[in-house]
Image (cartoon, rainbow over all chains, first blue to last red; front, side, top):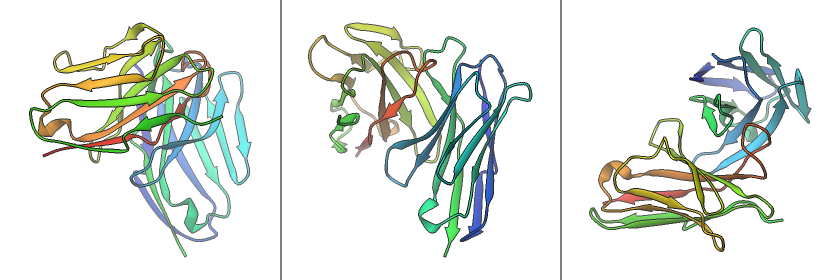
Length: 112
Length: 115
């Protein structure tokens, strides 16, 4: 059974800092992983999708990497802004590839 | 192409009433998933459906909960005889193939409050 953890649980940084969010998983036989952002009281916005054959994916100030051998993914946010404040979730398909198992999330606050 | 549409956005029910949550997937998507997010907890898988078929309902409580995805119309998550513990945000996701293979897109959720 796929289990996902995220560290740190919460993070508060001043505006402009570069930061790294970590995600660990137990089953390396994954199809892909997806990073989401969730704003309070809102739905999930897909940020990045990394296919199993890829090692990283970039979109604007965001870069996500995938290391299947170590069971880790990181989300790098460059030059953070107050608008980046949200909860960031990583998710992996279960072994059957039928649905996602979500991490508990990292709650990010970027202070102006 | 509109995203995944869920309605209502907010739903208040008294204990014992029925709650019906609707989800219209993105155009061209035939796979629908329902997740539940309890207050201060992560998202938990409930059920996976394709048109007219329930593929995996392993995450759904055995009693009072049911889901369907008819040939025409939205997917429906039904909760009968709601209790306070059912208060949560319910999210629907859709994908063109199984979530293991492709990117999934989520709706804005329905926030159910049982009073």
